[in-house]
Length: 145
Image 1 (cartoon, rainbow, N blue to C red):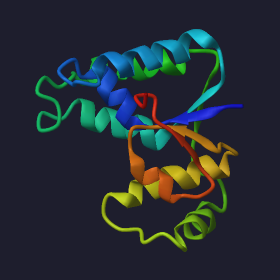
Image 2: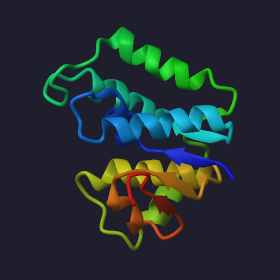
Image 3: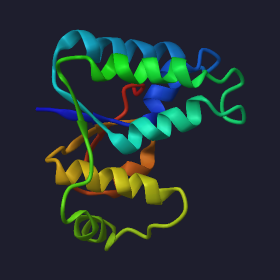
Image 4: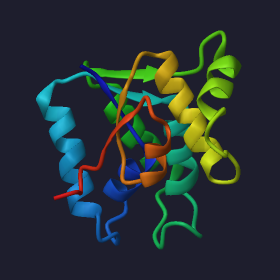
């Protein structure tokens, strides 16, 4: 069974000043080594590029070239799938947000959840508890003991 990976894990793995850095980097290394299919949404990859290079988010932001190399390294893995919106996306988004008050920072989470649902992905690794609001998703926190 394949799974999705949220942007926060990519960011922690790139931010050496983060207390979550070692655990996130270890998680991504295990994903790379194990060979199980994992999915990254274009939304996730573009969010990573935006935040990893932003001086207000990272004390030492990555250059665009370095952040792009990180993305390319993941995309080059034979068991990585990059996914995006499909026809009917808006209907899927409306369906999953129908019972979830969606505003502010929950909007991009709902966007990712809808992309995952459209692509048949029901499991997401993230450190963001907000994804638990989407009943169809099995949310796993790789930092949980």
